[in-house]
Image (cartoon, rainbow, N blue to C red; front, side, top):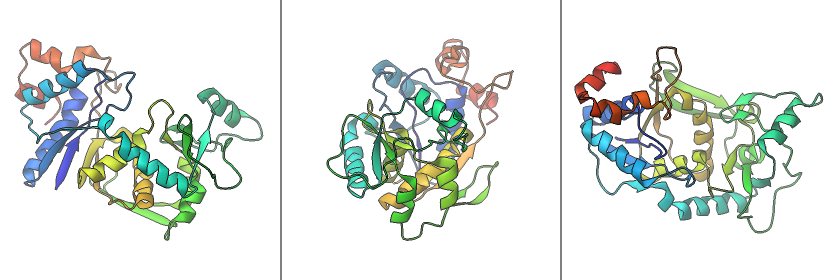
Length: 284
């Protein structure tokens, strides 16, 4: 079995990151597996080399080890580009010029109404969706959306999907239908103009490239798994076992964020807190 921890180098790691990393690391050790690192740095406007180095320093301080080299998403753009070309050539993508405000205005119109709230927010109302499958060369300077209805039609078994979940909140076999994907996920963005890919596409391709068998991550990403399982089917990739763990929250019940420097691992280190203390603080 192979687990991974995949932080973004856009700020300091906090207690929530420690919780996720240690769960994955302990699971790999318990089952004589491999714990891998991945740096998700596709947002080049926010990623910083100093934050990446601090990630390594914090995790080593916690006692975590992993094989080298570390996979970095900024080195993987060619793989994402190839996948996008394939999806485009199959007529499953289309360019979208809508801003967040455009989408909000569209779903707020009296004749539209909010269809649903999906993993990325309000489900896209289809403003830019073409009547027919797109043709010609793929535009490199546009946001690209997956035409969910055409994607489902392209599969040989588009009616149901499933994945195994070992997290305590949704334990068991999770099943979802094509109808759910249309109404509850919709035409999600698979490539942002400024990134040349998206989180959903990159994480799906990279989990397969690293041979990840067990994905351990926060409960806030549970709904996004619907997208990832669909993309796995579209691209012929294996579906790992998923474990979505609870989130570490502050005394007010608010989920920790990178801007919450008071709970940054580096701050605890500077104050003389030990890795054992950290495990106790996060309930491990």
